[in-house]
Each structure stands twice: as C-alpha cells, then as structure tokens.
Length: 284
Image (cartoon, rainbow, N blue to C red; front, side, top):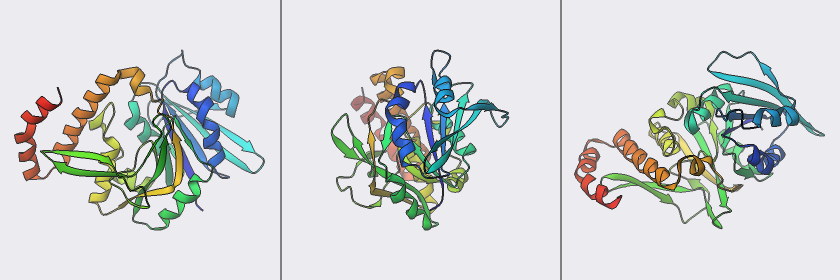
C-alpha cells in the first residue's frame, strides 16, 4: 500500500501528545510520515522541547512560509518514520494550519486528525485501499466520541428554510457521506490542492471541512465513510478553552451563513434572504 502522511494541527497540545500520539505512531507503517503543525503555541508551551526529546528533531532551513521547520525520525523494530514539526510564527487556526501541513507532506495520501484523536492500530489499512479509485477524494472514519458515549463520522447535508443544515446519519454503514471530518479523515493531496485547501473564509473555525467536501463533490469526486477505520475522539479541543461555548456557537452559526451564501444557487439565495428574520429570532 502507498505511504501516508499524517497531519495533526495543534495548539498548546503537549498534554494531548502524551495521551494520543503513541496510538498515532502505532497505526503508522514503515516510511510513513508524521507532521505536527504547532499553531504558534508560544514559549509557555513545551511542544518543541517535547519533540526534541521524543524524536531528536533539528531545525532546518525553510522559506516556503512564515514557520519554523524541524525534522526528526521515529524508529521501532520494524519501521522508521519521518517526523516533521512545523511551528507557525503567527497563529493561523485550524484551516490554514492544516493547509500548511498538506503543503509540506511528501505523500499523496494525507490522514488529517485532531490532536485529541487516537486512531485504532488497523485504521490505515481500511482507509488506503479506497484510493485505488482515482475519483475518491476523501474517506472519513468512525469516531467513538468518548465524552458522550456516541459514534459519528457519517453525515448528511440539506437545504431548508433558507439555510444549509446538517446532522449525522443514523446509519453508520459503508457509503457516501456529505463531508469527511477534518478531525479524522484521509484526503488525496492533489485534489485538496486543486480545490485550494480549506477556505480562509471560515476563519477562525467551523464549516471549513463541510465546504471542502462540498467543493470536491461538485467536481464529481467521491467522499466516503469507512466504518472499519475507527478512532477514539476525546474532544479536548482547544476551541472551547480559547473561545468559550457561546463564541463557538456564534462562530458556527456565522460560518453556516457564509457557507450558504457561497454555495447556494440563485433561488436558494432568495430563500436565504427571505428566511433571515426567522433565523435571527431563533438563534438569539
């Protein structure tokens, strides 16, 4: 099977590396690549020192964009992994940090996961074969949401009352999905870059992964869900601590409106405008 680059965008994530990174290393194969994009965590965070100790990283010359590039490796008895730590000089948030991880990835298949995700050891062996079909853009994982005792990963999207709305499927069987989650999905790098990666329109967060898959599906590519590729998602994301729950809800709602206006057809945009008083009252 082809080699994979695993990209993990992270902010002040040392405590999460301790919890989840060993599971990431265990699922990787010989000559796979690990890329962690530290989003300008700052001197109070020990990410660089942690990676120096764990992977013997060394700083390299790098001029592609404003970030520091460190290179190291991880060896076990049956595999050697390339390890990259990319440290943003200025905070970029999830979308732009992920785009930077894809930009430096050496492999065509990129497994994008959050720093609070622990993949099962056989995860890659169920994701990679789908990409033998050249029309497959992305394949999402079955997420065990440990904080809720629920499962997710397969999603649906529809237009109603002037807005695009979404929810998870009840049926978590193999098949197409409206989008592949940026928290645990494999993507084809060439198509990711053809689309332009995650749109900065959705800064600082939310709806960028829905939009990415939407753009791919409009181009005729496939976005799939593979229930045998499983991860534990512990939902210790930094967004809650950085923004707080109310601001997170506001950001999500604001980006839902951006997504609708970007992707709606003419009549859907008319509907969007007519339904705005309803949504303004409902979302107070």
